[in-house]
Length: 356
Image (cartoon, rainbow, N blue to C red):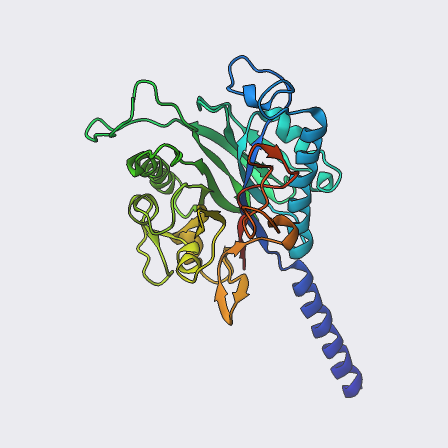
């Protein structure tokens, strides 16, 4: 009798352990610059002339469909690597909602049932940011497009502030596993033409100020600020304006943890320009997500590189990397020297994992 009870106890413990393993849930939160995902239709209010069949890039339906397939293939490959699709995926350099509807309908990722949060922005290039989410894992509450505005007490050198237009910052508010979250998707002003860092610093200030307001309005809320920052984690916009810290231990409650700061210092990158690797594609997390108590969702160590664990991933595969020519070793882009080469993006995607 005692032996039977002992056997039953062991079996119940095994079942409970297996059940806990099955129910333990991690959530993937990432960002991907889709590198000029334009449709083939002329939009009179968008600067899309290059991406028309008669435009400079000879952007045909066939090329557009190849681009959609390639973007979806990368997202699907990340899902295969993680054993799950992203719960949250921020994207940039997309023309409109239509291209996202086409993207999420691609066969490789259609089963994720991604829902779209997108607002048209006033950007001069005609590109926007957006957020894709899985409705089975993220309960959407509301969202907001936060416009880029200038401070009156700052001299934005060489910038015509009356003419300047760039992407809004997107904020999406909802819940994961019953916990309240806000996600910010940014595509900060470009470096092209030697544009000053104070433009990117201003964009970071806008995202940071709104995030601090959300923390006051929703005590305990967990926040991720992500995007193509056009700056490294060591630059002023990230390190000062967004209060990005290299370690969780050095954070104060008003700071963000930037897991890519240590990765940059270790020599890793998400894009390369003139032989120099940078990490512009970043996810930063607030104090509540970095210091969650036991049983709460928090950022997890997710990748081991050279015997060292990091809390961020720069996702790349050989087929996502140029193998020859001028850009050998760089992310495999869509166009090279004006020619369509059927690549993916000039940025590698990045992501973090949150769990209990």
